[in-house]
Amino acid sequence: MSVIELQNIVKRYGDGYPAISDVSLSIAEGEFVILVGPSGSGKSTLLRMIVGLEDITEGDLLIDSERVNDSAPRERDLAMVFQNYALYPHMTVAENIAFPLILAKGQYSKEEIDERVSRAAELLELVDHLDRKPAHLSGGQRQRVAMGRAIVRDAKAFLFDEPLSNLDAKLRIQMRTEIARMQRNLAVTTVYVTHDQTEAMTLGDKVAVLKKGVLQQYASPQELYDEPVNLFVAGFIGSPPMNFLPVENRDGQLHSPFGAFSLPAAEREKLREAPRYLVAGIRPECFRDAATVDEEVRGSGAVLRAEVDVTEWLGNEVYAYLPFEAEPGIRKALEELDRDLDGEGTRTQVVAVLDPLTTVREGDAIDLWFDPAKVMVFDPETGENLTRDPENAKRLSEESEAARRRALERARAQQTEG
Image (tube, rainbow, N blue to C red):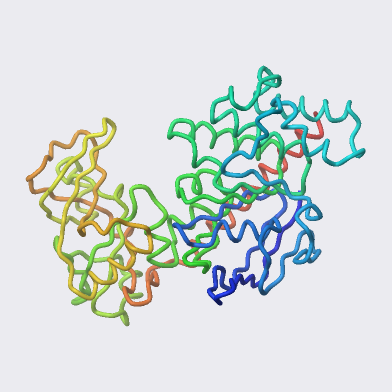
């Protein structure tokens, strides 16, 4: 296990274009860090700089406090798992897994190689496939072979470059679980690139959100979800994504296309000097059909009235889509955000995830209940989250780090017992 530090890392290509702009990250021993962002955000470039496949234009890369900017990939002792598996088709599973050990001529005896391959195969449930060729394996099994090749090396860290993007949805879920279990059992420092925010939220101890080569926020998944620093992070994290509703800040209330509502006193105070036109962020799951809410609970929240355009029944929940028109300045900001998030430029709308007991259907008017304390408010010009609570963000960060340390201690205890 190793500590990896990126200090003010910059990557410029020949034309001067900054693919990575002044990124600083500290990756702790045994930590699972995700680099996430839409296409062109620089996440794969950053990973390749860590492993040594891309030169660093400016800044310092340290592994265990040693500067490795000019070190060759082999000297960095990092194990990379590629998107396309990079397996040798003429070799068996056992030979593919053993290949990096064989390549290190004379460093490992045949008995040690066999023991390491056997241990990796057992961990990844490949024992019954050791004599097979890659062509006879499923996509998930091939990915496990690629992971096995990384495991046998006992490298300082594992680096994954979108390892699940070639798999179907069901296999991706299964492999996510296996990668999480493997990382927890081995307690090895891991850096993982993905464009899938669901992978980022479910796998990472910490997540680095990138936009056009610039680090937006580096935090635990829950902190990103509950206390995003700006519109981009709030829109990228969450599935379905956060709703952004244009609001006018006047008379102590926020006036939206679906009606006015008030925030709690502390949040209202934060908006006292805010611009007149703002963007309110509400997670889809924060809405409830007011008809299904107890009268007592209903009085503690706010209600907006809207007309339902489309509904989707998913068995355990119903998605209701509610279109709206935005003021030109706000609409421009929302369209720009949509482009940044690789959106399709669809119409402005709110998505409400409702209880399946709702009877609302297309064309119906609906009263949507929500807790105003769950609302985030953003400046459309700067993107800043004006209602972010730094104290809560700090608490979430500390809780996440404490949980990670407990898991690391358990893994070390199991390794000692083994």
